[in-house]
Image (cartoon, rainbow, N blue to C red; front, side, top):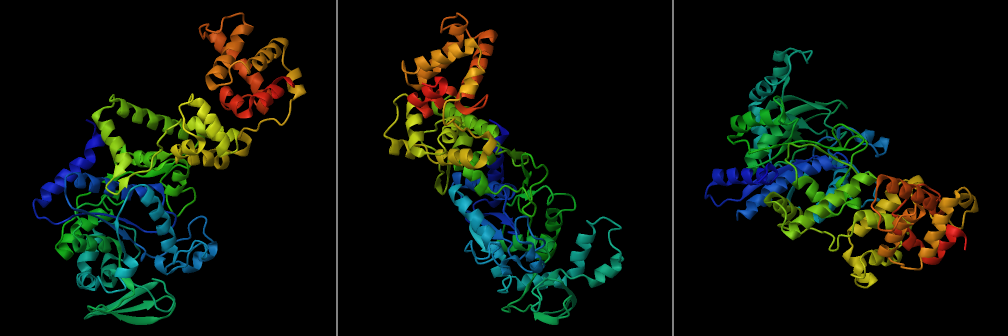
Length: 550
């Protein structure tokens, strides 16, 4: 058994042992600040929590996957792809900013636009969560008592944070910063931002001033609505204690010696009498060709919906399930990478189906195909993605033609076209999008409109003879198997060899040269889709006309 199979089970076992027979639900938490496109790296936080929760459910334990939307965080900067005029909202709560599509997306706010985007992807990935929005909880006064506790112990908070900071980073002395420190940031009712500074805290009342000139006060008494929140490194442990979080993963930056988790571990007990949850460090996910950590606030971020356009949901789950949380990996949506990914997935499924897979592979496939929410969408008839994308390219995504060509590849083992097309989903739609929207125009396959005499005249006598043999042989066996045998046999015949001659290096070189000649006649290029598939898609009469002009 491998580590990949055991990491979530090991954590689940520790959580069960720690809770004993209390009967209370085990709380597994995740959280995301919807400050921009929620990328595949953010998805890892949710996925890591989800997998531990699933391992607990397999043990018969009641579990809550509690997800916090940190939509009451300040808007820090305008993400790539959003109108630069949104700079005017910097400093405001994410939930108080308009939808970046200016209503076209139908979301109620900037935060909700990106939340809705992720929710749609999580639904097809089989991930269900109990959601909490901080933009609702903070203003309602839910955390007022916890905020008062932090304000009363502000020197303790400062000392804890200062002990983890690098010396020499600040112009003011430690004593000056300590006297002025408060762990709460009000949002100004005049300008809406958190460009504020608390000047005093007396009883249960916060006094503050804002850069815009407004000065005000705010009651933190129980039952009072407020506008403001705790600083992040206090906010996080406060919620651990309040929500009874048993497990929550975090990225490498949070688990650094001076990171939020390290500080939170101290403050959760010192301030709130709680304990830090069990955790695991997850590595970041990168986008191949961009490099570095993916961030929702910079260009080049790949959101789950982008991957789901090209990769069926069960395979996207597999990308995360098959790795340890601490293993970083790249999402590569380039042509060959996507094809290899599907090939690898199909081989795994085949090994499991035949009983040749190892126990770890069986477990990984099971977790990719199902969750407590139900089966995860997969393609019932997993025809090669290479074939589907190639046929989609040749036919410009024409589903009727695709069904005809794929049926030929299945050697008669296919239902009627409508049923076949249904069995090919969602992979077929992924392949069509891949071929028609992702592959660059100059890499697409464009079949010639008519015979090209200039290209034919450029062939030597031997190649012309080979092309004529190919054209004459089309009518003999118009099937994938027949065409495959034909295109590989013609170069052998040109060299005086039988059709079943061994594929020596010399024979392979002759076949490559012949294929290039045929591609030039059919698609004005030296390479293209597999010749049997290409010929089948063109049709017998038209293929002959493009080859020899008659």
